[in-house]
Structure formats: structure tokens, C-alpha cells
Length: 219
Image 1 (cartoon, one colour):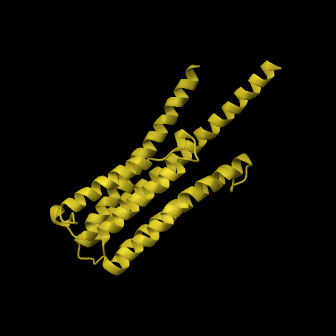
Image 2 (cartoon, rainbow, N blue to C red):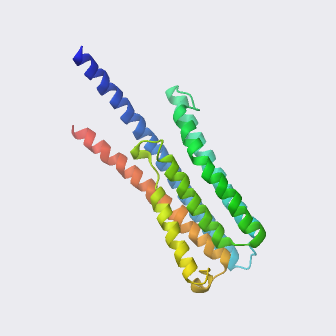
Image 3 (cartoon, rainbow, N blue to C red):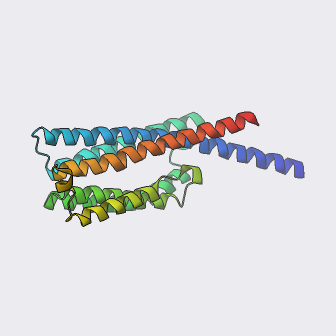
């Protein structure tokens, strides 16, 4: 009887490990897709502003909302495909917990940042608001997902706080230091955070999976 229990426990652990590995690959793909899209959007906004295009606050805001929608749609497609392949429900308890943990901070950030750009054209503050609220959302998700699937919440939070402190140190604007407009500065903040940090996170997730695979192959 003890041997049977041990066998069942090993089987369950193995299935859990396989599920985590599968979700790790999925999370890596979403992070890399998000990073590439953020870098492309930020560079495009900088290029447009540098070549005489006027980037209004609302346009800046909705460009990044479109990025968020595209990333969310990409993640949903991957999750739907995985659920269909395994025969498990798409709207599972785990997915529901992640969404409920992630959504409040993102919704608050969307409302506050919209006020910043629609009424005051505070591009830099809008970008910093997104970074910090996104960090809070990731930290909330950490409470409901396994360790290998936790996002870089602390990295985003520290990065956002450091950039905000530098921003305050130089007269509440990085624009004079960089020699560009406020919209370009905000786009650069988005490239560094949502772009590069996501690309690094995606690479780390993929490398972590490869390391696990090598360990398993030797056993």
C-alpha cells in the first residue's frame, strides 16, 4: 500500500512538473512577444516624433493600449490552444485566480494614466504610472502561481522607482537631459522597461526550461 501511494505521488509530481514546464514555455513566448512589440512601438513613436510628427497624449496612450490588447490576445490564443490540446477547460480555476489578481492594479493604472495624458499631456508620468502599476499587478500574481511562473514584479517595481527618483531629481523631467521631447522620453522608458525587461525575462524562462531538460536527460 505504501509503495502504491509513493508511486501515485511521484506520478502527480511528474504531471505537475510537466504542466509547469509547459506554462513556462507559454509565459516565455508571451514575454518575448510583448518585448518585441514594445520595442517596435517605442522606436516607432520616437522616430515619428523626431521626423516632425506631433504625438498627442491620447495618441500615445492608445498606441500602448493596442500593444496591451495584442499581447493579451496572443496569450489567450496560446492558452486556448493548450487547453484544447490537453482537453482541459480554458477558464480554469488557476487562470481565473491569475486574472482576478492581475486585473485590479491594471485597471487602476489605466484610469490614472489616462487622466495624465488626456488632461495634462504628462507623457513621462503616464509611462512611469504604467511601469509601477504593472509591477504591483505582477506582485499580486506571485501569490497565486508556482515559483517558476512568477513574473519580474520586483524588477519592474525597482526599475520604476529608480526612474521616478531620477525623473524627480532633474526637475520632474528627463527631457532636458536627453535632448528630446517628452513623448520620446516616455517612449524610451517603455522600451527599456516593457521592451527589454520582457525580452530578458522571456530568455530566462526559456533557458530555465532547457536547464531542466538537461538535468532530466541525465537522470
